[in-house]
Amino acid sequence: MRRDAPMRAGNRFKLALFSANCSGGLARTLAPERWDASWEHNVALARMADAAGIDALIPVARWRGLGGETGPAGYSHESTTWAAGMLALTQRICVFTTIHVALISPVFAAKQLATADEIGSGRLCVNVVAGYNESEFQMFGVTMLEHDERYALAEEWLEIVRRLWTSSTPFDFDGRHFQLRSAIGDPKPYGGMQPLLMSAGASGTGQAFAARNADLLFMVAVEIDGLAPRLAALRASVPDRRIGVFTSGHVVCRPTQREADDYYHYIGSEMADQRAVDQVLVNRQNQQSIPPAQLALMRNRIAAGSGTFPVVGDPDRVAETFRRLSDAGLDGMAIALTNYLDELPYFCEHVLPRLERLGLRAPFSPNEEEHDETHTLAVSRP
Ligand SMILES: Cc1cc2nc3c(=O)[nH]c(=O)nc-3n(C[C@H](O)[C@H](O)[C@H](O)COP(=O)(O)O)c2cc1C
Image 1: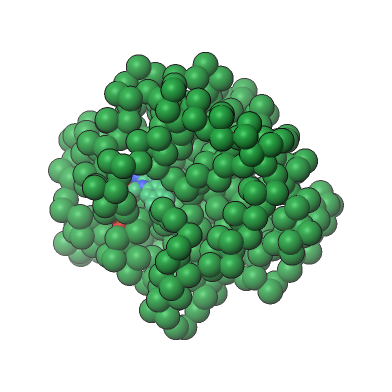
Image 2 (image 1 turned 90 degrees about the horizontal axis):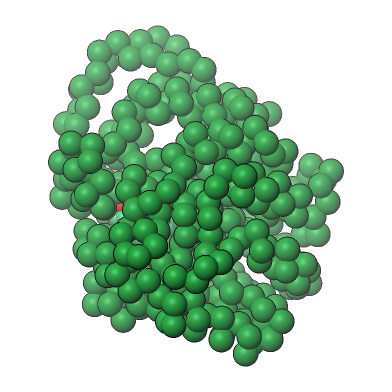
């Protein structure tokens, strides 16, 4: 039996920790307490999150840093190796890998992912990304295709991985982007069922790709207004199953709203690594998730959390923001904290009980293996 129920069913509003594998996490700030992504810190964080009932860990896939004064993401653990280590060291939490389809061979990936999945007894989840950072493609000597063609390649990549995961006989593959002879792979994913698949990308093409292929869409939510109809339209385009939708955010939670706002101003404005913010803006030109004009207005958000959704406030405000996001139709959020290890205990102590009272999360008991099936995500593929 796979053990990925926290992500497939479980809490109505799921919470994952995002980007802890990367120096700086999601922040592009000079604040000295910014995240140091050492392995020791990651292990301590994963164990803390596992014990507190956080649903998942999600790494970002980064191959080079973002420059500026602090070089955010310059030091980042390779996401599948990181996930395998995290799975070996935790008991219950789901662990994602984030994988660049254009840069990693699908034959290599199918075996690598199945191996990590076995290490975690079926707790591996997979976030596929088409990629947008041209300098990373250049590092690999790979031409970055035009936006929609990257998704066409992703479709072939996924078909190959799925066939390797299910076929017991060698097969040939003749696509536009991949031509393979006599491909075969073992082990297969744990428990005879494929890992939960998420797809990060929010353009029309990216959403259509997720609708066809993924259990979960990982999208950018810039504001709550207008989110509900957007999600309703997305779900209407996938009538045969319930596609899950996650977004990414950064959280500053402090005892009072004033303290939270002051700290947000400090990391995102006073101490912003402006040159790293500039670099984010340049790199994102190939990404449609946030329109470039809007991005330029978001410098503080980029410094504090890479332009993801800001959740800033006292515990009541933070819990209320999650409630509004849940009411709009989101299944969960992948959050970053400025310093995950320092800030997670306060978050767990003060925000999680409020989410339980709001009916968004069940009280967590480490020995509890049962999960509420009411909020089951997409129908799983065999
Ligand atoms: C929530 C989210 C997380 C992402 N994580 C990564 C990542 O870790 N590495 C990466 O190279 N791209 C990442 N991407 C970008 C994807 O590579 C995607 O190709 C890019 O968003 C362009 O597609 P789009 O125009 O459909 O959004 C992410 C995108 C989103 C929306």
